Image (cartoon, rainbow, N blue to C red; front, side, top):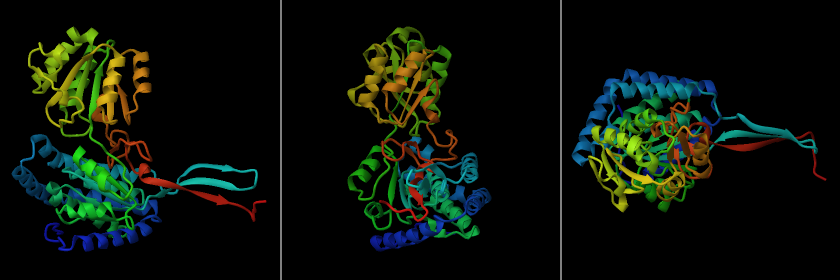
Length: 426
């Protein structure tokens, strides 16, 4: 079995150049692969993940030990850990991506011109995608599957903690490609923890068409500062939940608890709670009490500090991604103040309004420009799988090309196919 640690190259630049050359060659072949071949590759990979579950879990145990020795928080260890149920979900995700309509070659629009030309805008792969991410090994499978489906080769550089788990998952993807007579080099994992490999990947303009960073602010900031390759930004998930004056008490309680506590280490976890002044003494008090009872440290503004279990918030708590059982909470005078707070402190990821007032929801949707806006729903639904995409490569918070969950369709660009009949321009 492939051991990523043992395959380190002393010359990182030479290693990355070789990977780039192989990825570029594989991308050319994968771009014209049939939908059936890609579906077969993904189905086979899913079967192998199930069949090799023991090996993957053993590799993950090594990664978990490394993570504990490194001092990762409980939330980060949760992101890193694979379980039989999570492995099954990964396999199901691959099958879901494989079963989707193939985006490559699909016609986005077509029209005829008075000059006799027929013009069609069709989807085409981006080429070679570099994905840089942190501790979640499931991203290895999701990114590999989505790039394969969209006809792109991918170079994966996962977090140092997940190297063994990712290595076995990549083996499954590559075996799936081989079974479908597609180039195995369409999915490659950088086989070293050396950070010099990241810097090389960010400057490989000859071989890589786009970089997708998936991780915390430090990682994304490094990528944006040093990349010469175009970047799909996946910034930190500073997600807000706003309890409006017209919120339903039961919905507010269930949604807020789920948004914060279901999984605290994911980018869709709520990090800030905003409460309309008019419901502070009723819904707001009950929600805060429920959060405290669930073990959440609530860092509240001055109006909340008299409530049991609330600790004082500092200015640094607004606009902070905790990724832990911590939430910042503030009372606002009205929806305008809630929107102003989110505009100032948000990261354009996901925001949710809890309200039965259609006009309030409409204002929230119209005046905020985050990638995902929700009404009466948990921010933990900010996930490509939950959007019906099978999986996602990340949540893009920028405004160019892709936004929100990045699935297979978002990993394509387009070209124009123009057909004439001996047509000349006068």
